[in-house]
Image (cartoon, one colour):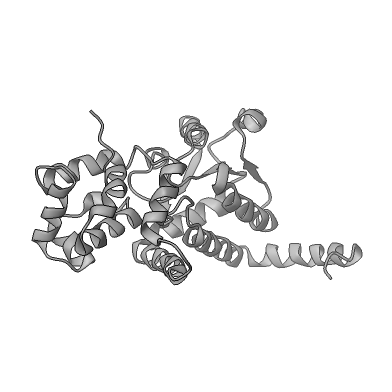
Length: 282
């Protein structure tokens, strides 16, 4: 029987001791990190004892930490519904506005963790893919479409052919001519969108270069990616935090523009002429 550990945690939070609640809040904030942590590592990160972590697992109904860890690894794949995440955020943040700084500090922590996890070699490979590609397709859906829209807006000004695909029904005709010299960028974060994964896997089958922007090693995009860049997006709320993913996209755009400086300068000059002609800016 499938057990969703995250659901058990937020349901039991009102009954938890202060130390157990600290562990619970850390797990809910870092769902893609905790499945890989042993007792000592989790205890150190939360600043509690090893014994407290073991007691926490038992409190949730498991025989010990190994069983808890086994189920939490499978639970990452059983994403909480939006309604469940809303209830969870009420438990974590409480009422009133006293926890507003905690929301903002959560975004700061996400950026710091993204910086810590960044693989510079993979980042450089991603830039090379962008520079080499004849055509770039950005595959993204639902709330993450905001990230795709931002990325498309700027890459379109640097590269020659950039297309955003945000609807499998509307955009599937654009995929018939995928080639090895093209690049497909898949952007998806918890809860992962099926159509994004399906298009991304199709691109891999076609032999196209693939770049995944996602949130962790358990993302379904990773198995189809030639290169993966991860960014933290989790907060204990009904929405995802896209501050760190957006920062990562900023870095990709900036470094791609640096490598294409001469062509980009010339294109920007022509764009400025058009903007002036039509009085675009106030």
